[in-house]
Image (tube, rainbow over all chains, first blue to last red):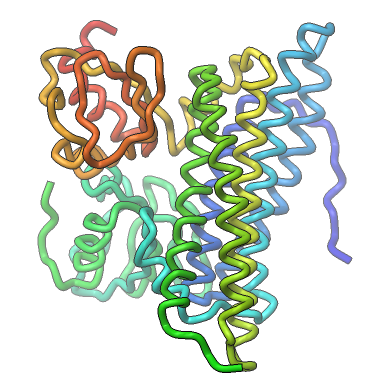
Length: 202
Length: 198
């Protein structure tokens, strides 16, 4: 039996809760597919953890929503917020289902890598050697989204995953990065990560 | 049972790739529908949901009839479950779109959330001065230039789904998703110096 955290009222704005649910649920899809694609058990377990967080956020959001409704009109307007939050929760459940393929040792057929060559939003995994020019740089300094249309989803450092790393997170030698985005940007970034390319263009 | 040709596997890959892409596109379209309170976009999401259901069935039938070997069963089960997850994601998108179709004016909180999220949605009008006017989407290279994916184009009040040979006209409203950083680049591209006016 899984352990469930007790749900208690905490005053958190609905907007903050929904924002976190939306961000996490979409991040989780990419993380879960990465876990399946690279057959990474630890990453899959991270996704399952995130799913619990989203569940808790959903409970809290519904509580806040109930308190916010003063009359029938409020309730009519707020029900949409609850439905959208439930949908974000469902998306995170779907991501957890994908992660469970890995944690339950079912695994995916090797065809999966061919599938990922044909989808629009790609995922890569790259190891950063010491010679790479990104060692010591922060995520903020790399400024990847506008430069290459890509984003770093997670960093594996030693045995720990850093999920959705913040702007001030520095890249270390030996890090393994998972990035998502446009194919051309990813190709360039992989070469930069792995030290094949020594310069970042704007 | 003899094993079917490799072609079946190719179609299988094609279908699952389309399932994945469509389900994720649908989330963006559904949030766009909320942001713009657009019944048309919401209906498009509903149509895509039906398409995904069909695609999903076709994919599962292909897997089941592929004449796989016993040792492949587990791996193929993994693929089937990926398909189920994509279908669930598309259901969630349809659920979001349904809010619009129920005639609920999306609450302010929803609009603010979509605008502030890491993967945001923008809509911007293409002005006469824009370098995009007259170009096809392929020529415009918007994803390469801005990192933004074009979700839909609204023209004369109608939303059309973009194709690489769709030509951009002045007055079009481009609806796109991507990281917040690319949103400004797209606005600048579509309506040069519109930022000064805002």
